[in-house]
Amino acid sequence: MIQINNLTIRYDHSVILEDTSFNFPSQGLVCLLGASGSGKSTLLNMIAGFDSNYSGDITACGTSISKMNADELCAYRRENIGFIFQNYHLLRGYTVIENILLACELNTASEEENRENAKELLNKLGLSQKTNEKIENLSGGQKQRVAIARALISNPRIILADEPTGALDRKNSNEIMELLKEISKERLVIVITHDQKICSFADKVIHIEKGKIIAKDTESHTEIASDHKLSLNNAIKISAFKRGLKNFKVNITRYMAVSLAISIGILVFMLSLSSGNIMDKNISDFQDKNTAFNNGYIKGEDDGKVIELLKSDKRIENVYYQYKITDVTLRIGDKTEALVEKYPMAKATEKMSYGAMPKTGEKEIALSPSLAKKFENDISSLIGKEVTLNYGAKEYTLTISGIFNEGYDDFFVSSDIEEKFYQNVEKEKNYSISYDVKIFEDIVSVSQMLTNKKIDSKTAVKEVEVLQNTFNNLSRLFLIVSILILAIGLFISSVLLIKLQNLRYKEIGLLSALGYNKGTIRKIIVSENLLLATMSAVSQAVLIGCMYLVGMIFSLAMIITPLQIVLSILSTGSVVIVISVIASYKLISTEPAVALRK
Ligand SMILES: Nc1ncnc2c1ncn2[C@@H]1O[C@H](COP(=O)(O)OP(=O)(O)OP(=O)(O)O)[C@@H](O)[C@H]1O
Image (cartoon, rainbow, N blue to C red; front, side):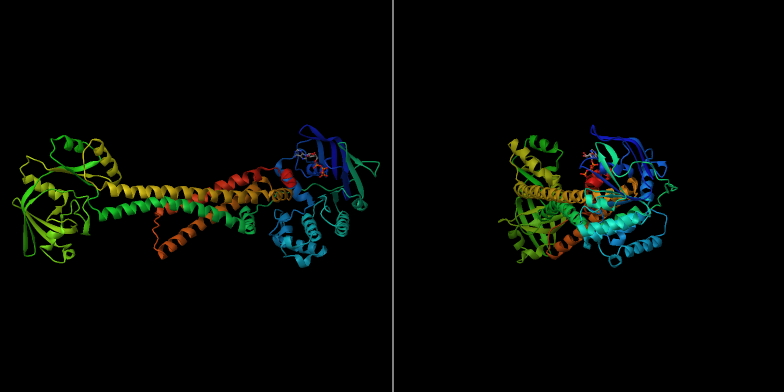
């Protein structure tokens, strides 16, 4: 059945088997003994086609397996070899029958036929009651019977058993050996063992000694004639996704922990970014309340130098001289009040009692309380009312935007209206300069520039600075905390994923033993990774939904833009893919024989 001719194999310069030959019979139970490290598992791996890195030749049913490529070796194992391992190599989370059917998923028989065969085998092995039991609920002896059923389901010509009774007590060992003896009547069963008592079941006992295979109980090594041909049918295509989905369900708790850890990490990180949005919202609230926040006022006569400096600065706009004006009248309804003279004052530093300062382009006016009282006792009711202002033979209709907190009769109008006033003024002695800083972020730097040039400007820079500093410190703190949480989330999920993948080497080895090729195994793992990424992205979306709900219930200021939501969901999926690819890279690239040893 199996002919070994002049076989030599070395690992790291040490010779394990050296120029050894042996003929295994077509049927019967062969026990393989030898000291630890003598090369028993190595020989079995070579017969199984896991290791082709040897010199010499191995022939099975007259066909050399030494020159076969990886796919042919998969077909050879799938069709001709059944494996039994010391630690069973059954998949946890799968039922008894699912474990058995795993071995015939790639064969051409129908699923129904395979299921019937599996049930028949379980019946023969006395396990029909356990058909749909989860594998982890079985005893050691029962597990090994399931492993035998799995090895027999494809009716292979060769059974390779690596210490099949190593984890069992004497009673169970004897029962398993009786079973193997029974099945060896129709096929070749090679059993590796250290137990001399097991050899009493053997038809032939062979030893590996000093790199040679030696039969102790026979004189000749001649092959028993056999008309069996090696079967090398192509595997049917299976859905790697379906298998990946099943594995995913089995490991669902771990996968859920991974996706939650990553989702929370990324969500908190996104929240820290959203503090920028909260800052923008607060700035715009601040601007609505303090409409003169960007206005600057420089008192004193200017010889042209200061105004030139302001006009040449790209951060500044609406620069003009202010003058004293005289004989201004204001009319609200049928009441008229006159101001004999009015001096320009700083707008940005005024505190508001009601409403806001006039906005540029809005034709608005703000009054001091004493001036407002001359029109109405309830000064707050004046807001929104119309004022007709007469100055220099011109009439302006303005809306009252607010009442500012000053003790004398005064008013402020929108900058554009004020500029028009001065067109009628004799421009000899300017009194002050008014300017606006274009954007909020430049208010502090413009103020600093003027201070450096020893120009005294009255602005709202202190309030702006306090607001900016508070938010900068808060965002910095939030960013550090969220980076920490993100790092912890990534660390936990990486550890969980790597631990999970480390547990799966035997599964990869088992699938190879059952004839799954590397491509299919890779696809199964990739499917699982994609499912995990999808789950993480969905959990991210659910978390964002919950966060919104909590924010709404407790009226928390959490602003995440739709773009940030999409980005956080996409980045969760991508991060999971990257981590799981890194975690499973070693697993996928491990050789089956090495995976089985882990
Ligand atoms: N893939 C490999 N790479 C390097 N060395 C290997 C590899 N496989 C096996 N070996 C080495 O070959 C020698 C034989 O190993 P093998 O597992 O075949 O021994 P064994 O007889 O089955 O031992 P045991 O009874 O302890 O299981 C050992 O020294 C082992 O370390």
